[in-house]
Length: 247
Image (tube, rainbow, N blue to C red; front, side):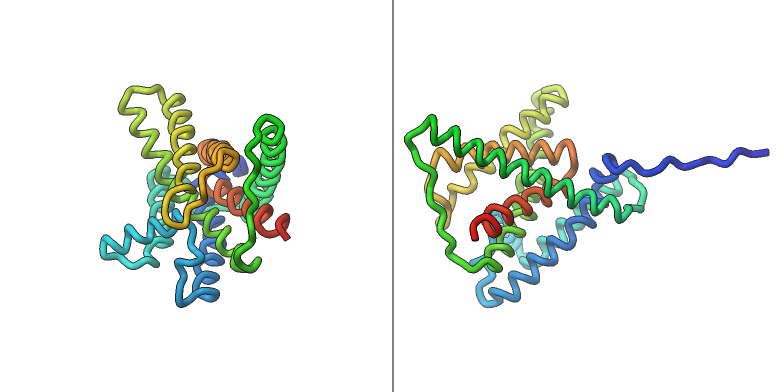
């Protein structure tokens, strides 16, 4: 008599980190952003796009490819990653719901850290926090923040963190230290990128230090919890701070 092999129940904590789970979680964010940009600013979509999105689409345009190829490339990268890892082609709906809940909890934690950072900075420094004025309506801001959550994470975490990890490994850093150095270095690039270009923010130590810390927070989530939750956390944080708490 042969014994029936019982397959173990899928583990949420591991399943949520897989590229396929990230892809399925990411698709609604991409759809909301891409359709929102076209619906709100069909004549000048670049006015809504954030820096990372604009830079990557500009590179595609200069290479002779269409700008709309960018979301397709993101999907291809995640599918290729899935093939390389040889994960099963099965994702539970509960995992997607859990990823959304985890993203919201992490975003709230980052909001709390931002409040602490604000208090400490005001106490220790005479430099004041810059006043951010809403230059567009809440719907336009929401669409722009969703795009920032998606494409800033594509550029700085999905692409640059592995690239930096590879570079540090070339210099014979142990894997753990290569990951730490990749997270730190890309976090400073993330903060610096907000102060580069014609539409960049004026340099301010308060915003730069917070963005560097936030970049390290997102990089840590990327390394520990996967790409999908990183995007969800970033987008949820921007929506909380830029739309809900700003109104």
